[in-house]
Image 1 (spheres, rainbow, N blue to C red):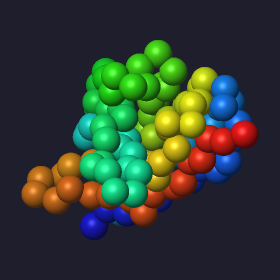
Image 2: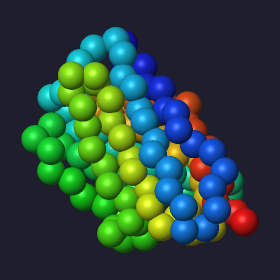
Image 3: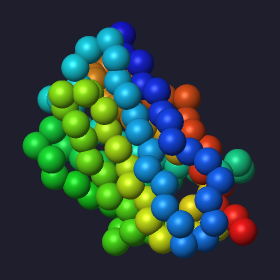
Image 4: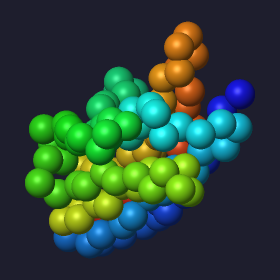
Length: 115
C-alpha cells in the first residue's frame, strides 16, 4: 500500500512563490513517474507536471516556464516549485502515481493566490 501526503499549500499574493511537497510511504517510488494535478470545484482535474524515474519532466501549458517539478529519491519526496503565481493557479493540488493496477492519490493541499 502506498500513501501520498502533500504539504506546503497556503495563501500567497499574485507574483509570489510556493513549494509543495509530496511525501510517499509504504514503498519506494524511485522507479515510478510522479505527477502533480490540480482541481478547482466544478472543473475537471488538470494535469500540472510529471517527473519520470529518470528525471525527465513535462508540464501543462498553463504552468510551463513558471513551475518546476523535482524529486529526492532518498527521501521518497516530490516537489513542485511554483513561481510567478497567478490567481488562476488557485486550486487543490494533488500528488499522484500509478503502480499497476492502482492509481494512487494524496489528499491534496490547497493553494490560494489572492491579494
